[in-house]
Each structure stands twice: as C-alpha cells, then as structure tokens.
Amino acid sequence: MKKLKILFGVLLLFGVFLSACAPANETETPPVGDEYTYGERATIQSVEVLLLESFPVQARAVVSGYFPNGCIELYNIEVEKDGQDFILTVHTRQPAGDIACTEALVPFEESVNLDIAGLEAGTYTVIAQDQSTTFTLDVDNVPLGEDN
Image (cartoon, rainbow, N blue to C red):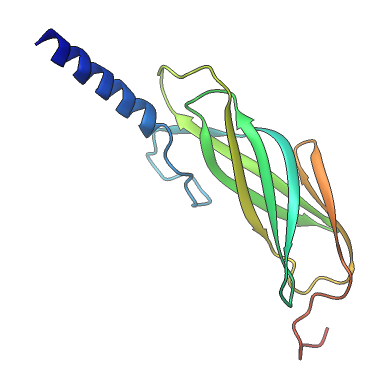
C-alpha cells in the first residue's frame, strides 16, 4: 500500500510538471481574470529569417532563446514595423502566486510571420532584444497585376 501511495505521488508530481509545458497562447491581450503574470522574461539567443519561395515572397522570423525557469512560457510574439526594421517583442507569462518552479533554463524556438507584402526592394532588419539579422528583397514584393 505504501508503494502505491508513493507511485501516486510521483505521478501527480509528474502531471504538475507537464502542465507547465502547455502550448503558447495565441491571443494578443491577457484574458480578464487570468491567473498569470505577464512580462518579457525570455532571453533571445538568435533570430533568423526564412524567405519562402513564392511570389509575392513570404517571410518567417525564427526566434530562439530560453526562459529562466520552468514556470515561464511563451505567451506571444509581437511584430512592429518601423521603417526598414521589424521589431519583435517576446511576451511571456507564468502562473501568479507563490508556486514552486524548476530553476533550470528552458529553451524555446518559435517562428512568426513577417508581413512583407507590398514592400519595395531593399534590405530589411529583424530585431529581437540585442539579436538582429537582415534579409534582402531583390525586387518589389507586389503581387503580379497590382500597381504601386
């Protein structure tokens, strides 16, 4: 009977740890009455851009980094365009209150679409914290049949 209680306790603890690995929420604003705290607690290690072979060209930014503990998770990635720059802000969330969290770094990698439709030919920069990369459009990225 004692072994059964220990097994049950281990399974319950394992379930709690797995629940902290829920997928990122795609909504832009925190839900009302949500029991999470929100912030920007991810450390970005790299950002790269993938240009998809299509016309008009499509682009995805791939952001890699880590969270400082096992309770923090990705909430969303906000993309703002400022001139020739795309600025990515990685928003995180973690359960509110005094809870136990693993103190291990948790890696993540996430991709986000960049809205490059209609951009003129040129070089553009993608920035996430202190990491950045550039990509170049050799021709105007306007669908065939559309005038500027």
